Image (cartoon, rainbow, N blue to C red; front, side):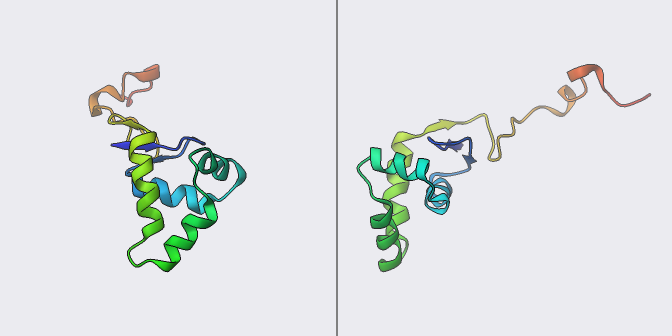
Length: 97
């Protein structure tokens, strides 16, 4: 499964990785998305630092599992898996014979 960031084009393999992305970025658009969900960036970071086991990430992860777009077809990194035999069909650039 792939979780898509609601702010940018980042694709993560799980909701916890996406939570790390959002808190790690900490820029205005990502903070704005948190504010639109009635969460404060500083409160999440404080909970993360004060609790054992990543309480801040846990709360954000639960929200992301409910709120974000999940795609089973796209792998983390935005790569769409294809069959090996289909790779040579695109663009007519197959191996030389």
